[in-house]
Image (cartoon, rainbow, N blue to C red):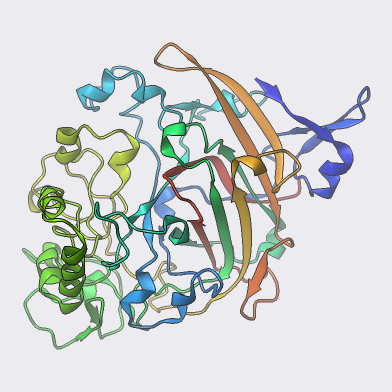
Length: 476
C-alpha cells in the first residue's frame, strides 16, 4: 500500500484536517488519516437516511417550485443506499445463494467485496472489539431507471429507460442530532471514497457530481404541503380524515405518534408508502392510470409483455415505491448480482410487514415503524429550504490530490476471492464548510444545521459510490 505525498503549501491551502509530519528531505507534507482524538460526527449509517425531497436549486431542478404536481418528481432516478450484508461475502456463507457463493468474480467485484480495515487505514491499530471489516456506505445510482414516484411516461426510450439520464438525480436526506456545528467545532465534510471508475462496463467514465446540502431541507417528499404518515391511514374504508392529492391519500389529522395499529389485517393496509396507496389503489388512481397510458403509447407491445413479468416494473408497481428484501426469491430466480439485490431495499411500501403478509419465506422487514415525511420525528412537516450547498466532481479527470477537495490518496494491492490482485484506489475528500458552492435561502451560519441532504446528478451510466467513512469533522 502506498501514500500520496503532496506539497506542504498545497496541504495548508486545502485546510487539511489530518495529522501531518514534515519530510525533512523533500520539504513535503505526508497526509495521514486523522487519529480518533479529533471531533467528528459519523453520518454513514444507512438507516438514518431516507428518500430526499427535490433540492430547491432552480438552476438544477426548476420543478422544485411546483406543489401538488407530478412534474415535481419526474427527474427522480433510482438511488439505492445500503450496507452489504456479510452473509454474501463471508467464505462458504450458508445464507448466501449458491450461485453467489460459487462465483469468485462476483465476490471480487470492487463495489461488493469485503473491505478490510487495514486496506484503508494501514497505519491504525484496531481498538478492542472493533471489526476488521469496514461496513461501507454504498450509494448505487441508476440514472436511466426511474426512482420512486417518478411518473414520467413520455421521456423514455422503447426499453422503458429514462431519456437524458445526465439531467436526472437521486438523493437522500437525514436529520442531525447535533445541530450547532459551530459549538461542536465542526469545520469540514470529510470522507474516504473508493475510485468509482473501476468497472469499465458501467459506461460511467464521463462521471457527474455529488452534492451536499447542510441546513434546512424540506421533508415534503411528495410536495403537497401535507404531512404523509402511514399510520394515519384508515384500514376500515373510512376516508373521513383523508385528503386526496395528485400523489394519492394523505391523513388530514396531525399525528400524535408514529406506530402502526395492531388490529388484525391493519398493517398491510397502512404499510403502503408515502402515497398512501396500495398497488391496486395506484392502478385505480387517475394520476397513475394516466402515467401507465403514456407508457403504453411509447413502449412496443413486446416490451410491455416482458415488463409484466418484472415485479418492479410500472405495470406491477405504478408508484415505484415497493420494498424488496435483498434475499427476495425473485432475485434468486433471476440470479441478481449482489449490488442489484439492494435496488429496492429502500422502498416504503411493504417494508414493515409480517412474513405471512409479505408472502415470501425469505422476507425480513427493513423497519418496524411507519414511514413518514417527518425525518426528525417532531410530528410536524418542515417545508423550509435554507442551506449551504457543496458540489464535488465525481469525474476521472478530477480525481487527483490537490484538486476537487481531495487531500489524500491510498493505493492498495488487495488479494481478492478470484485469486487475483486488485488495485484499489481510495480518495480522501475534505471540504471546508466555509467553501460552499452556493447559499440557498436566508441561512447565515452553522449554528442550526438540522438536516443533511446528499444527491447525485450529471451521470450517464450506473455509478457506485463506496464510502469507507462519511462524517462531519473538526480540527484535531
